[in-house]
Length: 355
Ligand SMILES: Nc1ncnc2c1ncn2[C@@H]1O[C@H](COP(=O)(O)OP(=O)(O)OP(=O)(O)O)[C@@H](O)[C@H]1O
Ligand SMILES: [Mg+2]
Image 1: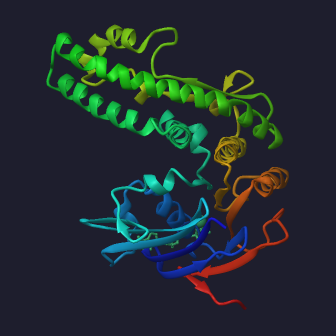
Image 2: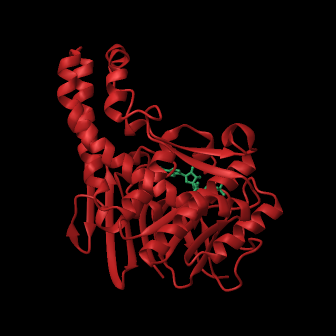
Image 3: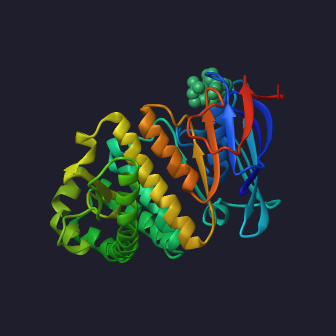
């Protein structure tokens, strides 16, 4: 077990919940509004430092309270680790193994944790930001030099954009371009290499889920065939007009196609969910394999949007994944669930005693 225990206080509808996970497959069952997604969200938050459905963390604090707290006990690389988070207005505390920490990188870099939830089709259907984040999660896990390069890039980009906002000249901009390109090309190289690693596994997973001829292609954030430096130079007038840098790794994308066409425009909502799940599952499997570790899969309401055949194929993929599965459902009878599993009932944001 990787995720061994979750203690959650004042997070959404959850007042006070203490959950110990002892089986590789745990089912969280309960009616609408019981707090199932909130529980999954808290597990995600404890290890990723943000929610997958609410970008504004203050909205996660239970109404009438000032902060939420989550403590996750994990088993990582043969060691027990404890992450504690407290968040609220003016409060943002992270503790790792009993000591204050600045961020979760030390934990999240060692843990492969992915979520499949009812809104996951956004990964395919919406703009590139989600796909960049998805790609970056993987790159961050396999390339230790990625995070510092990304931080340098972000900082330099901010400075270049500040010059643009102040109406700076092309010559003033050029002073930032070298540093921007140096970090940008590193990021591009790491992303490109990782995207190549993902390509086959995604196509294979999609095929097992019932979608053939799926392909993903990395787009660097500027026109193909150009260097980043050339692209910056070619777009300097537009950048000055729009007062922001319009080319670079911050505009990268992972293009997902089905038979050569952009998938989001040709596949149905359920198929988008399957496709997004293929990306997530392929990534979890790849990263767990590369790290020789297991993955934690958080799966919220897998049946949403899927027909019975598609659900059965998704469940088979989840069963085959080496690692831990935490899955929610309105009741515990999720079709295709591995035989051996624990069930926890939640209602009104609290664990219910076994009947
Ligand atoms: N900040 C908050 N404070 C208090 N309650 C909240 C807060 N945010 C959300 N809630 C409530 O938490 C409840 C549980 O939501 P959650 O999405 O976890 O339910 P669920 O069990 O996943 O339900 P469903 O089966 O419909 O998906 C909802 O009734 C919601 O109104
Ligand atoms: Mg829910």
